[in-house]
Image (cartoon, rainbow, N blue to C red; front, side):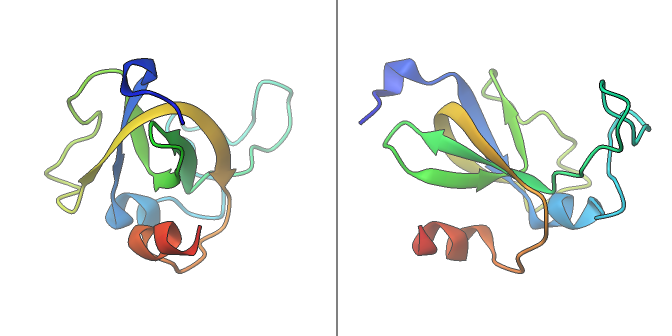
Length: 105
């Protein structure tokens, strides 16, 4: 199991933030084109590996212990813990909450 001192990121989950990202190509920089000139597949959230070895769904991460988004807009933001690495993007809305996802893993 990974150790807490190996943590690189803090992670949060907000269903409101996830819902604000559309399957039509959410991109915070206003472009749907990636670095390779292709239409970017939208990531609605991400799966990160926690320090205790579990895969957890998050909508934002930061090296800081402060959330990197405005909590006024995403008032349901919940701290999910410390993470060691990115695993994969969630490209479609599975209609599972973060809690249900964690139970299913």
